Image 1: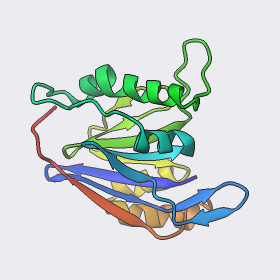
Image 2: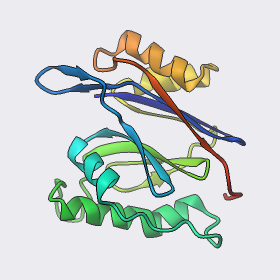
Image 3: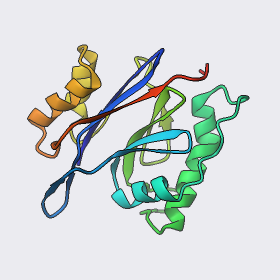
Length: 178
């Protein structure tokens, strides 16, 4: 489990995330945010799919003509993510289901959106994002004015699956888009 928080501003996207992974026991020091091409992914859930996206996904270009982040993601990025996960035999699909077994936040050129486990892409009109087991604590903290780093620290106080050192990453805005 994990907690990842992000805030989008005119300058870009600030991410913060814990480094705890849980399976038979807790392991601290796991990176949950990575960049592949020009897309930064912050993922909670299926680590196998995260590994595939980091190391084998061919990220489609976010071209100058692409002005709508959601449209680009739905038409180009999500199909590549699904194909990558299926190619790595890492989905849990049912008829008509994507089955990514993860949730996340992604950023391109300083703009971000949610990526749901069914492949849907959602923008938050306030520019506040949080995913993972401590996301409810983190999103509340962000809404109250905390930085993403402070929000993850608050989540770690109340969510036993969030812990380890907190890391941050900034993705600058380099393009005007919707």
